[in-house]
Length: 138
Image (cartoon, rainbow, N blue to C red):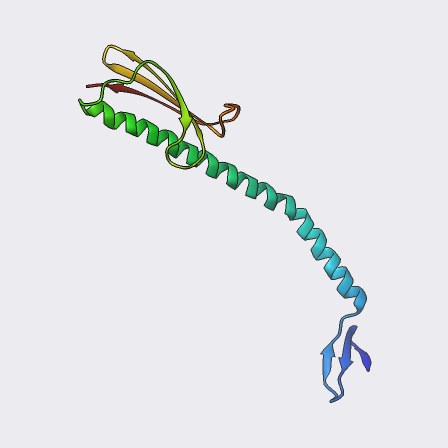
């Protein structure tokens, strides 16, 4: 049995205890309000997820470019390796990330200028990372 006490609706159970009762309308209104709030934040979550994936891709591409340049640096310190020939070398990365690597080198005296560009694929449309270094080749 429903009783009204001080503008609050109570329901009495079979043992005579009073429980706070909510009407169906109140429940539907509460669910509607929660749905509107949730839907308002949904685009924020999907945009954040996209940005996280893009940032991870840029960081990975930066690591690949850094690794290519570090390999050139190590070779520049070893007299067994001659300076790389001038020109451009294109290949997929050796690190299994699936990036397209374009390495351009040019030599002037003993200084080798190396530019590494990392693309998402071999079409070279989307540049993910680019690094440049000047090395004194011994």
